[in-house]
Length: 373
Image (cartoon, rainbow, N blue to C red; front, side):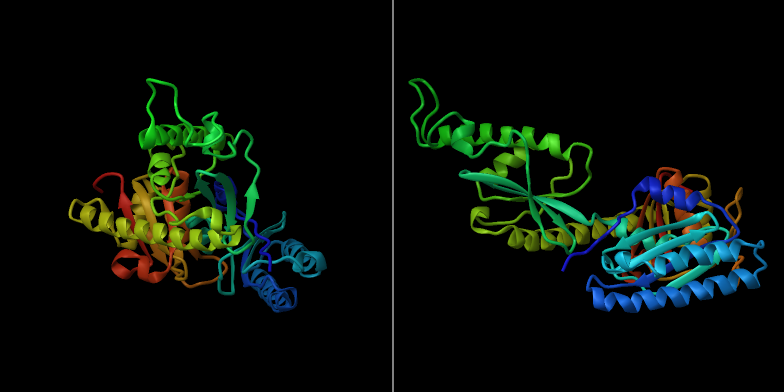
């Protein structure tokens, strides 16, 4: 089973968040990587598309807008090749200008929203935590870099300049080779050679990992694990690693262990964020109040926003003051938290879309501020 995913970039998210059209339609549909099961999602999309067009017509959209949206959505429904390659969920954003589609690895619930802007908060779940990672399987006798997707098959990455093993990296036939007179020998000499090896591995990885922000999970035993961590230059090396000799593990086994390590990384990150929220709360530098956070986001004060992925708060946020007005969930109103997230991202802040239990104080949103507000 292979997941076919399209994870949005930050730039794509910003384009969606800044788009404005009175006939903006957002649809989320659960799908399946199993082609036969994906047909249920196809039927659901057709039904939600019809509902979106109905809402546009009832809202008095400009003549031709509902028809244009219907055409884009119908084209998607009828695309057999597209439905043969799916993931866990589908996010569709349509307007009279066309449609943008993302196939997502996380399971989302069905939803359709119509307004003057797109409803993107559920989409943020796919980018809250990386959906891929790398495993560095490092041993004295071999080294390989394995790319891991959330649910798809892993594969070994070709890394130019990657040394074959520790001995060849040190220019020796074996790590046990004696050094010239006056040079460090024995176990200390082996550590020196392992450090040389680790540096060459780190240098080779730079050409592949440069510019990426994906976690790198280290699979190695001591002393090589500690040695590599001491020379590593990649800023996203994960704290938790994979114990044991990686030479005895397949790529699939390493990927499974890496996902467990990543779950630990993300759980720790959320725990640290909750602790930070509590620490900053008494200083006036965090809040769980929707109105306060909306105003803070409007003035660029929010450093980190934590949003409940499932809860929607329909209404409006004033463009200048950030005042919140709650409203009925119709084709005129939009998601307040969605709008807050847009303002945070455009101001250079970070947005985490999480489950309800991970939001401090139990509301639809919480935030840590850059300074007291």
